[in-house]
Image (cartoon, rainbow, N blue to C red; front, side, top):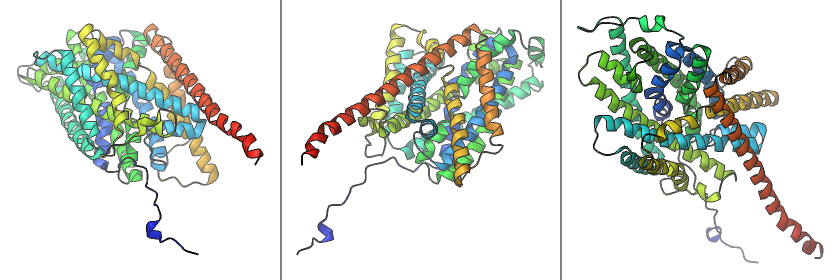
Length: 474
């Protein structure tokens, strides 16, 4: 009897997988980068126009909710870092249809946001450099950031880190100038004090606060990308905990601080709210500051586009790996990037640029309306998943590397807060339309995912049934 040399035996080639070269500092700044974008630099003005200075209530409510959601996501991501993040956690907690629904909903949301940020950055840049039309600039940005996302997660993370650093520094400078203006420290500039805040705090009542709340929720959307990026980060347990702690409070300071300055300096009826940061700096009388902050806003939007494209491609890659999306979307290139997943995630952005050529200045407002309340569904799924998985872990005695404090009270409080937001949202005609359209969208995605899973099971079961008679006759 002869035996083969082990050297000649075929060896299993491991399937290519995503890289793990993202640094903790890059993960933290990505969380900031994805959230400090169109919602802050463009949406803050729309929120003040809708609710007046009472938009600060909207920011506090949404800020409290996102803190709880991030704590819940942090616990799950540290225990199971996965590029599908909350989609995977929903699947583990509530089943495959729930997981696929959450994943596709978030992907669709980001696809729309990517297009909105490309158009928003182009429109802002055109105001200070009216040379290349908005639609052409948008196409250029889409090509550029597609290339960056295909270059590898390490290069992408470093690019996003410095992008985020720039806009964080600009916001800190803006807060300093705004404080000096309100305190009357700027020479030859009259301070408005707090008259704009106190004179007409809640001019639109509860309906205005509700309408603004959905603008604010859109602004905070994207923060959850930290849990997606954890899968490609060194030492994810430590990195996620650090990112969650720093991202949350920084976002609240930047958002609430910036919006307070804007609401105090600019009346809620001011035309300058179309570009609120530039409007405040123009009021401060700083030469060229308005144009400079506009360029920073362009960088902020592009940074958010960059991060959201990353998140969208990883989510659809995860769906593909779990059999909830076509298998070809999980193909990895030499840089360990899911290149086809990147491709399908940018396709709508290119289409939106063409639509902007055909229907100038009409596409961006329509895009903002499409994704107003989808964040709420994703956040709600994260809280429900954490509630189920944490109880399951405690029952089984599973040790978790990061535990959300105040459980289950704070998780339940987050769900109650979410329910109240829905109730308030239905009290306003504008936000109720968004909620109804989002519910219909979620129901449609869930039905498609359930039907797709059922058809897949039937197809895989049929060959096995056909094979049984032949096997039985042997």
